[in-house]
Image (cartoon, rainbow, N blue to C red; front, side, top):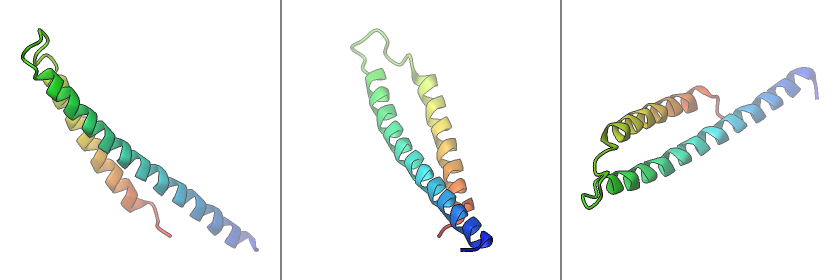
Length: 82
């Protein structure tokens, strides 16, 4: 194997690792969405004194997560595929 082929092979492995990590981020985003939905439901429980005290924070988290999802999608498009 010559030097150029070695570089291409290492580059391919790195790109595969990047895609794997980006896929893991996407999966984690889905988990976070589910946790935020649970937290939102708990926050809206009017039988407790802390009802609706997290509305602003939940909105901020949802917006931040949306931004993370968008940038993760863009990153997936940038990293070369096989």
